[in-house]
Image 1 (cartoon, rainbow, N blue to C red):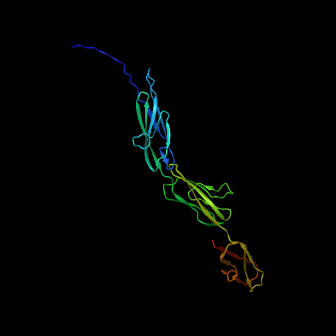
Image 2: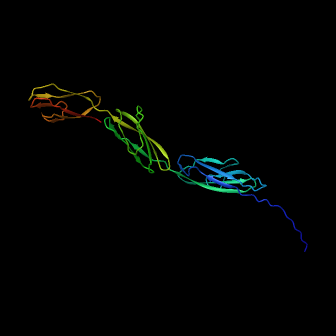
Image 3: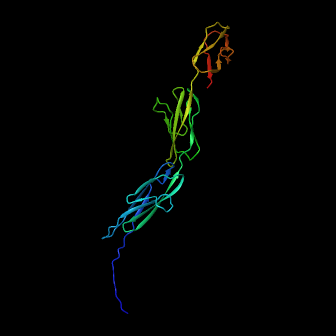
Length: 261
């Protein structure tokens, strides 16, 4: 029945606090995801426990991918679309641990192509975007006129009048609601206009007169559309029509020429 009593002092250390965050929980594919771990120990009087290690599990397999006493921030590239959990475990100098998890979701970039139909140089070009992916929320067009500073637009289907014929590079940057961007390039052909002059001589009334068109452009004329007010015939599709005017006076004749474009 003999008894004895003993006592000792037990040190109880606080578990670290940990807050794992990511600046952007939705990351565009092909970008790096960023993570920040903020850990600390609240020590009571007489204790001086500190954080000694950060261990990061980036592929959720239970094995550390990187660790260290100062590894409080990291960026990592995930290989595809989807949601990925990132786990951080911090350890104090007394062996106390705390774990926190944050999810990051990889979202897709826009997909599609700009549409720039071929136009004649006296017609404004109309553009559109053939979207084959996520909804597009922002557009920024550059119409490729290097001689101008206002050849841009931010609407989905803009139009632009080019100063002359040629091949122009058209660039559009499209963005989704998540802020993912993609830059796409196409070209637009702005075709030249036919040009020339009408030649004819004054004639007497009721006499035949031949009208000629002298082409000055290097394209190919494929059709002629003459209009002769008060003449016979009143219209013609010939290159050099013969017209008879039954009364004297002055009349304006018209010619619409169309080239291979």
